[in-house]
Image 1 (cartoon, rainbow, N blue to C red):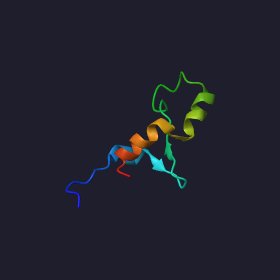
Image 2 (cartoon, rainbow, N blue to C red):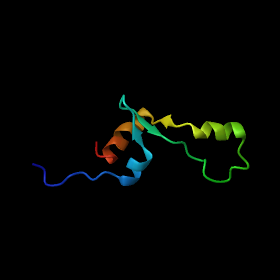
Image 3 (spheres, rainbow, N blue to C red):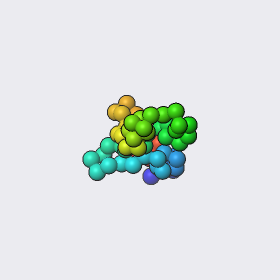
Length: 66
Protein backbone atom coordinates (compact mmCIF):
# COMPACT_ATOMS: atom_id res chain seq x y z
CA UNK A 1 0.00 0.00 0.00
CA UNK A 2 1.26 3.45 -0.86
CA UNK A 3 2.39 5.65 2.01
CA UNK A 4 1.34 8.96 0.51
CA UNK A 5 -1.73 9.92 -1.45
CA UNK A 6 -1.79 12.61 -4.10
CA UNK A 7 -3.68 15.65 -2.83
CA UNK A 8 -6.07 17.26 -5.27
CA UNK A 9 -5.53 20.90 -6.18
CA UNK A 10 -8.59 22.49 -4.59
CA UNK A 11 -8.50 25.53 -6.88
CA UNK A 12 -8.56 23.30 -9.96
CA UNK A 13 -11.39 21.19 -8.55
CA UNK A 14 -13.52 24.29 -8.00
CA UNK A 15 -12.90 25.68 -11.51
CA UNK A 16 -12.98 22.55 -13.67
CA UNK A 17 -15.79 20.03 -14.08
CA UNK A 18 -15.62 16.58 -15.66
CA UNK A 19 -18.42 15.82 -18.11
CA UNK A 20 -20.13 12.47 -18.47
CA UNK A 21 -17.95 11.53 -21.44
CA UNK A 22 -14.78 12.33 -19.48
CA UNK A 23 -13.95 15.69 -21.04
CA UNK A 24 -13.08 18.67 -18.84
CA UNK A 25 -15.24 21.77 -18.94
CA UNK A 26 -13.98 25.22 -17.97
CA UNK A 27 -15.19 28.80 -17.93
CA UNK A 28 -13.60 31.43 -20.14
CA UNK A 29 -11.31 34.16 -18.83
CA UNK A 30 -11.51 37.97 -19.27
CA UNK A 31 -15.09 38.34 -18.00
CA UNK A 32 -14.44 39.88 -14.58
CA UNK A 33 -13.61 43.58 -15.07
CA UNK A 34 -13.01 46.29 -17.68
CA UNK A 35 -16.17 45.22 -19.47
CA UNK A 36 -17.02 48.64 -20.89
CA UNK A 37 -14.39 48.42 -23.63
CA UNK A 38 -15.47 44.91 -24.66
CA UNK A 39 -18.09 44.47 -27.35
CA UNK A 40 -21.45 42.92 -26.39
CA UNK A 41 -20.85 40.08 -28.84
CA UNK A 42 -17.54 39.30 -27.18
CA UNK A 43 -19.10 39.35 -23.70
CA UNK A 44 -21.85 36.98 -24.83
CA UNK A 45 -19.23 34.59 -26.13
CA UNK A 46 -17.36 34.68 -22.84
CA UNK A 47 -20.46 33.51 -20.98
CA UNK A 48 -20.46 30.03 -22.49
CA UNK A 49 -18.23 27.39 -20.99
CA UNK A 50 -15.78 25.55 -23.22
CA UNK A 51 -13.84 22.31 -23.18
CA UNK A 52 -10.21 22.05 -22.18
CA UNK A 53 -7.74 21.36 -24.99
CA UNK A 54 -6.33 17.86 -25.29
CA UNK A 55 -2.82 19.17 -24.48
CA UNK A 56 -3.94 20.23 -20.99
CA UNK A 57 -6.25 17.34 -20.09
CA UNK A 58 -3.67 14.95 -18.62
CA UNK A 59 -2.01 17.73 -16.61
CA UNK A 60 -5.31 18.91 -15.16
CA UNK A 61 -6.50 15.37 -14.38
CA UNK A 62 -3.27 14.83 -12.46
CA UNK A 63 -3.75 18.04 -10.49
CA UNK A 64 -7.33 17.01 -9.74
CA UNK A 65 -5.92 13.65 -8.49
CA UNK A 66 -7.93 11.46 -10.86
